Length: 396
Image 1 (tube, helix red, strand yellow):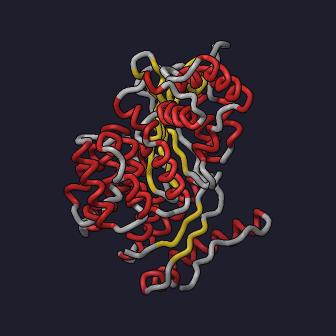
Image 2 (cartoon, rainbow, N blue to C red; image 1 turned 45 degrees about the horizontal axis):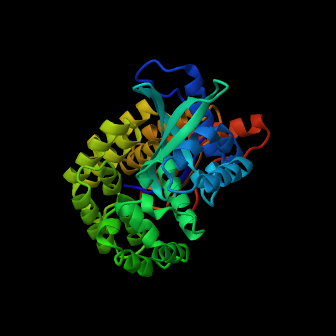
């Protein structure tokens, strides 16, 4: 298959799926969050969170004095919640976000978004609700790769902060929660090691935690995160340990897409993709099926999967790249031009710029009558639009 280095395409969004009647205000809010994530707008994300409802969740059952709790609430109300920074990370921009569906889970509106970044594929679930003024707001968020709601992780942050200030009433704690306080110094050391990219040392410290704490889901996920930057075999073994500790966990299917031990296990990969798709109903997963089939040299099956992904989500560019690559590999120059024209239509008339790697398939396409005719049409449009750059294939 001919690899394509990159493709720049701006396609219009299509409406999200709604599995049951949902108040349009919640759909509109989910759209706002989608746009804010895509644009890297931290302030817009912070503004949509209901700070009071979130504060209640974060502090519920926190083993601290009423005086400390009041002071904590005052600080939060003054400074707000850095939700945008938490979701966007250091990069700010560059996330490719797609609102997949808005539905009711019981009486709670839930929105699901796909998030593509340099780190790969993930999903973000938004719990929506109403504030005191009856406005649609964010109540809580569940990033799939974190394995817990943000309010739950923030509860632990404030528990440790209270312990550091000598304000934690440990007599109210039992089990793992008590161990969090008892192992505070070690956990802070782990956080510093992770922040300094010392993953090997961080894993060693995590392995010294008490068994119950070491087996906590959050710790196991942090351990996997560290192992991912080390040896592939160790990461794969970490995944097996996680699966043993949490069998059937939906995160396993998301991790399976990145498991080095499964990279040739087509049947296992397909099963993981299918299970994940039943949970999120995401057209992007049809694209991943196409990749697996392509690796099996089932090119016709791969084409059908890529086409299905595009039918369900025309905003995806990855299936178009793969289909274009397949067309060039098969010397289907007319089909390649049809794909380029389709890209132009989906881009709303914007210019499509494609850079191809050097090779015999590329040279044959560039010399074809079909490509030359398409390029002439591009040049004619360039003249009408005032001199925008024509798409130019690059050399090696």
